[in-house]
Length: 85
Image (cartoon, rainbow, N blue to C red; front, side):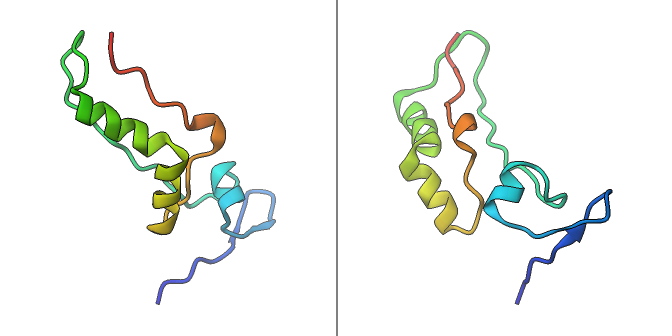
């Protein structure tokens, strides 16, 4: 069984892992997940791939992310990147 533990920050305070402390970067032991797209400069994504990217950033996609055990993106970061030039 894996159990997340509070960690001591530079000020000596114990920071417990939570959605809020991970999203605001105050919990020091978290990392981003990256999604890479092989897209030549100036090209646009095919419709199915664009729909997938939009799903990831949607509320439904973020619920899937959370159900899989990950922390969803903060609302301010849920804007899909512009992949067409």
